[in-house]
Length: 183
Image 1 (cartoon, helix red, strand yellow):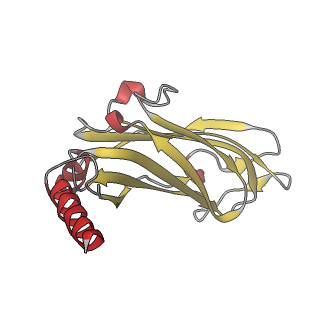
Image 2 (cartoon, helix red, strand yellow):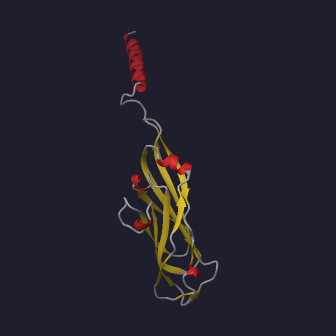
């Protein structure tokens, strides 16, 4: 009888603690996925022929207004923010590609994570390689516009390579915010 009474009392105490904001109450988070628009790199815009030695170029800057749905997510209490940068190409090249996203034009390609998300990706023929990056939560919090730009150093893997309209570097950036659902 005493054990039943003690268990019933403990159950009432734990239920009360869970409802009153006591540290024992469960905390719930949810992952919210949202893609960012990032333009592909059409190689023909920068060179007609890729030699077996390095050729470097920087793409034109692009921008996208932060949508109201994205703003709503960024205004939440976020525990962590991660980016998946997905790259693919069928062009037989090697080299590196710097991908940069910043809330201010002047901060593109900054290596300071509080100013820009800048990732260097190795270039190779692939149907899809993903780079996982932790993002500074404050980076996009106040952004109304996100600026994007790429910088590449490429070389052909097979002599001189004539570049056609289908030769491009395809990029996608997907963010995942871990948002506190209960506080």
